[in-house]
Image 1: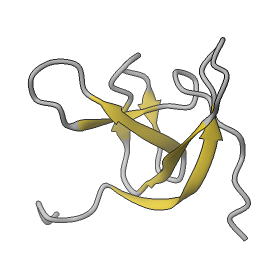
Image 2: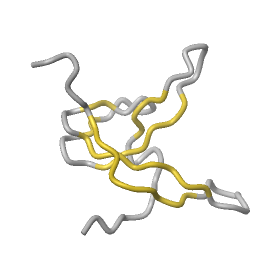
Image 3: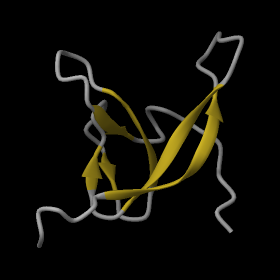
Image 4: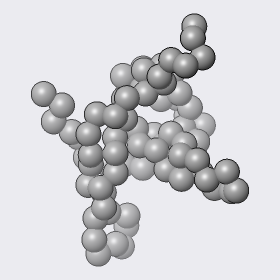
Amino acid sequence: MSKNRAKSRAVGLASVAPPGAIFASSVRVYEALEPLACARCRGPIPIGDLFIRRRAAGAEGGRVPTCRACAPFPDLDLA
């Protein structure tokens, strides 16, 4: 397995509004191309599942995968 192989691919945008928020924001939605783990709950994100990436807590500041259970978003029309 190549180290440069993509682990996910962008498939669209979803509009999300945190509880109590007045405005929604758009987030990029990704499809898992290999099994991943949610950075928040450590639950599995199986191949083919959709997820978002959120900023990591701490000094690193990268984006980490977050499952739909931890960050719900509406279904996308991928057709």
